[in-house]
Length: 132
Image (cartoon, rainbow, N blue to C red):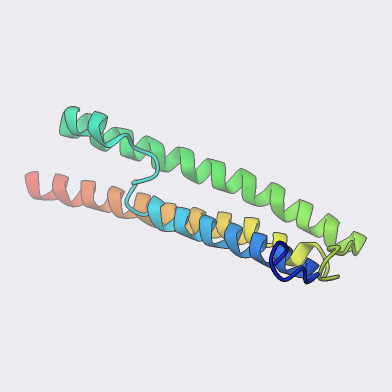
């Protein structure tokens, strides 16, 4: 648009940037469901099954802690921006609207990883019950 038609659509860049961030963060959340974002697959395959499972559990716990801390921090930042009523230059909407993706993303990651950890714990208890 900028090079061919010479039309000034300043808001288009803001919308495109916000959409790209939302897509990347939601895709990262989907990738975290099966640990495809955290593990180096060739390394994990070479480890004994118990060590690989422990590594996945540790990575899940670290992800839960990280998403919780970042989520709380970004929510506080969002509250500050909402109180300041600052606006984006192109669209003129308040800045907290496009930046709300961070606490939403962190909440999704936190909940997903807690469910994965809970399922892992229940699976281990079920195995122990069957072994006994």
